[in-house]
Amino acid sequence: MDKNLKKIALAFAGFSLAASLASAKPKSDPMEGFEKGVSNWTAVKTNWGDGDKSTAVEASADWASEGRQSLKCSFEPTSGKAKESATFFSEKLPFTDISPYDALSLDVYNPTKSTVQIALALTTGSGWDWFESKAYDIAPGEKKTVRVELYEGALKSAGSKWQFSADLEGSDDLRRLAVKFFIPEGVGETFAYIDNIQMIVE
Image (tube, rainbow, N blue to C red; front, side, top):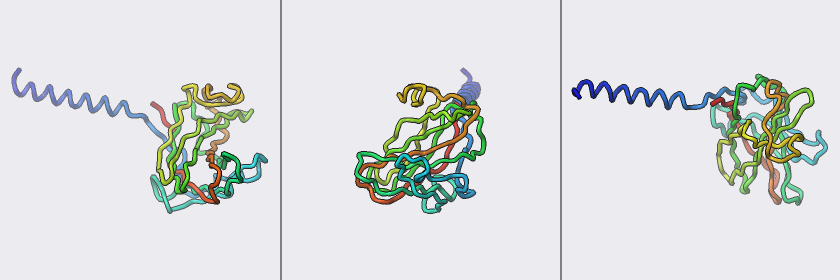
């Protein structure tokens, strides 16, 4: 093959590969970055009557995975049970039709000296149906991106008898987004951070 033709062919192949890789990347749209404060988010505290350990939320510049602020999620010491939860949520989301999306992700930072776990829960429809992800371990001092697939039979709900085998339903009517921290025995009053909540479409 002529050298010039070979160069053109190689250049075209490289361009095609780059275009293919670019098109393979998932598209993401921001759901929440906490840059405008946290007035839309709240801690459950005692409001749900289930022993939740959350106490407060606030915007914090102490850590952020993008932008300048994150959500600081504060919780009480655990009372001796093996694992207790602290839940933080919003019912005033920037958009409520998430049917075009395949997954949800967020960044989390655990500054405590213990491994905590985090799960996401989406509430949809007029029946306020609850769909919760499995819990992900966040090691002491770890900063991690957690991704939750919405349609791979990995959520639990009343319809799945609380087994992790459900897909998200009612995705065109998202009512609440909740973040649950599961805290092991012996963790004192402390906090963790979340940031950069994204909706992802492949």
